[in-house]
Length: 349
Image (cartoon, rainbow, N blue to C red):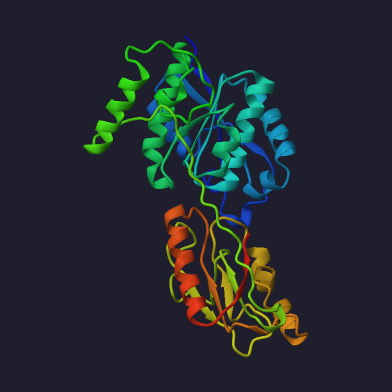
């Protein structure tokens, strides 16, 4: 019996071509398993074969996702796959977008199953969960082994023809479709059992997940802008040259404070961008693209703002958990209030 043919999709980093400097590479395909694909092949066994690895740069896909997905689909179709595996992408936003978009394209145009894996906070989860099987993973590649095991289990279920209509029970994100089922216990009994489990610290699974979103009312400026002290803040990874404070390029709960007294603009001998979630080469050509010190100084000179605060606060927003984001925000806010700042210009990527 012929092994089931699988094509694996990776970005430029996991495809072992390079980092951000190669994020603009065009779609390509190689007739072999590469990087995580070799682990996939080993754990799938002889009944499956990773016949090719499709690769595309994160920037290329992010700049034109429809065209990139179309080009990759054409390349992949030449290898006559029976299943596509993309990623896993963990909490990488651009990579997650690419994996979700490609899986959706492959399912539609080649009519074969497609699987990917992502962390729960990846923005692509909400975008594609209703039409793509997305295995739950940890936030970083440190959980690659567990993610691949979960994907392998799912691939074998597909090959065996087992039903996939309840993704949440298979370690995937639910599709969000509700179906009527017969339960042994009435809703009141099930609710009491869940409550007792919660009160006693036992694990339980809710039947209805209710998302909780914070609502922050905008603060009104209490004096004219022309009299206000305004600060620059960024989550784009701005650090002092050489990153002496060792700010991580993502998944952090830390901030840096960069003094700007006497500076009219940022230059590359003073600061640099240190962030793992976007191509920093364009920012590092002119750091004012990320944090517009030059424009802010002009506003200050022209009297549009009263004064520019002489410290810029920065962090790296890549993969930052909501709890860490709140922690970082509170710390920056506390410092700004203590230093008499009335308004903030917050820049991102």
